Length: 411
Image (cartoon, rainbow, N blue to C red; front, side, top):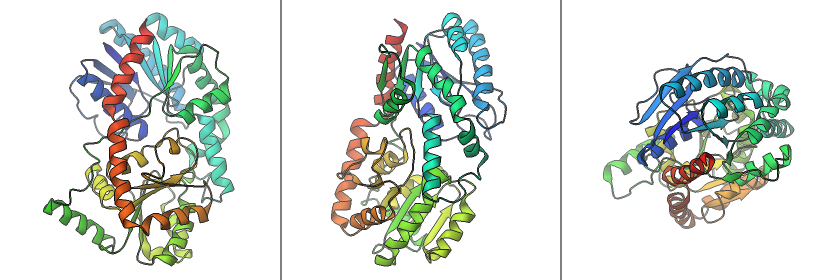
């Protein structure tokens, strides 16, 4: 079949949505389908080439939140043109970064094909995450224009999420928590067709370290020494955009407690964003400045090496639709400590890491220390995490599920 995917993110504009659309497209092609992605222009550079995947670029208004409407309009117009040139069998929207109203859904269905909408999370959930971050006294909660726009306009843009519920043949939530969020907020009809498909990760990029490979172990040792960590000390890794709702301020407070017990531990944070200087100043105030490193970004190959070289990954986010970082860590054979809230317990439990109470600094610190003080158990959890990802969180699995969903929507 010919699948048209409409996504506000696609490489080189990476992000959780961009990554999932990129890999899902390739997995669908591997099953014999053709995929056309309609995404926004910009992002720096040309989209990477994939056999069987055609990428079309449209305009958008560079205005926080409002871009979802403008991109949606241009994408629909281009979708109609595409269908006239090369008939489309199914349209797959990736919400909430595209906002269609009821009329636009009807236009798509009447002029193009049925719609399947992936629910990556809700704007109201994002707003709740920001409000939680404010209550937890995270730095500069409203300094980011995009976050401020979410606070002020999430209620307005929620109407387009409700339109997706009513205008789609099938909705697919990326976690049980996201589906429950939509049910609670929007009261969908009794016959609402929605199921949960967790996104997978790139299990060929994110792999455990092969300790029998002399060159890889040498690279691992060199990378750890770059951050002042030898084989007898601990490297703690956190990855994600430097935004208030990701919980890095709380992580620094917890790490300060961890550092008292394990002064040789180092925390490395990898993420782009406006909070870097504020977080480094906070680390200095907490007297852990020399043990905290914030990297603004790095190539995927280097990040994958860092994942498999860390002793532990910590993910303190206040809101996620699903959250891919824990899965990337697990795929790398590295245990994860994360929040006992939202979708995270659907992926992480005490067999692959541990959960702490969201927003509780002591709980986070205790969980981190409990993992680091038992290296033998940590190794077993890393192996269990890799096994879980291979069994349940791959794009091949996602493609198989979506193929059946597309066929159901087309009936």
